Image (cartoon, rainbow, N blue to C red):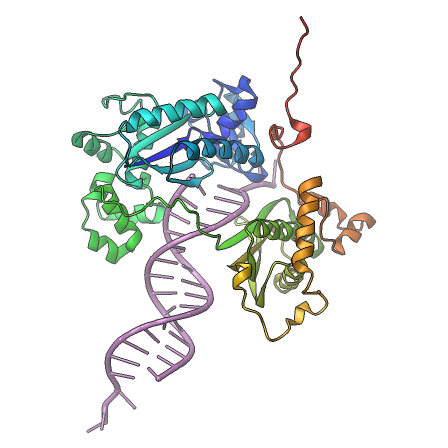
Length: 443
DNA sequence: TCTGGGGTCCTAGGACCC
DNA sequence: TCTGGGGTCCTAGGACCC
């Protein structure tokens, strides 16, 4: 048996943790740049605020209903997530952390499955303050569906819940009822495109999908959807992956707070992202061979432009100086005047570990003036300094900084590419300056 | 006149997830 | 005015091999 732990309205729950005034009130959390709604409290859901809705479209609705709006604060959410996952790992052997707020874990060899899960949920609530739901089923796909049922308890009142946040659907007729009342697009692995195809073929709910001929599905839509069909029948296809595999790519990109026109502005944003990506890569102890830079105007812009370019090194590198040099060159190649850009980004990929680097017989042209010998050492030093004094204390310089200080024509742009984050709460657990202060009265 | 069979590897694009 | 970020996997098609 498999269990799926899912934090309830996770980002909203994190905000409420440090600001209890928000409990009971409608709250939403926004995506980066204060763009879209990505987390809603139950109260906000009841008002009819939809997932993914752009903020500017529903501003009136939010004010009229006195909805509290928060910018996202990922360092806090990540920290709280780690605490929850650690509790889980300390109590169960086989755990797969599936996302920031979800984890699968195995219940094999346990006698009181439901009881153990109730205990876990209580412990997490008590120790971290975050409410969670746990669905138990034979497969991941069914566990997902079970979790959905817990969150929609009010609709499923005819099922008997032994606990408010843990559920295993045991009776066959109950499961059939649940599958029949689960829209096909709500099934894990069925997105927009697949659900259109399925509905055209009269497959409207999870039960219909379960009854589909699996070889027909495989022929038409591939092996992944075939697995979904089997998993709905209780056939295990997706195992719990408890050793997490090495990353295959690292991407850092942001939409700008304001659209950018000038090359130098894009470059000064890109140098920040490249350093973030390279630093992430070092944390995984990896070397990359491939560097991709991409650039785009807004999707909603009439004058659309989107381009990317990739460079493959002869020998994998960890050296930030080389990665930046390549990135800079690639950006130059795809930048075009006369567009207003909304986003730039970097993707590092084709990774390998230090032990398995294939050395090159030929010198990389780009690499001529960068001493190969000290790359690893220098990178290590950067990490040591930044770990001690804070990320960004030591960083790569570029000649764009000169423009910044000389306040040339585009210096306004230079400072404006930073993300919009108007409703940001403090970094309560991840920044010394923001740690909540407690006053103690002396009696 | 007639032109095979069986592979691998790479890439781009599409679909999905949270 | 304003529409997120970061991933994975699969498939089809092209290029190549003997």
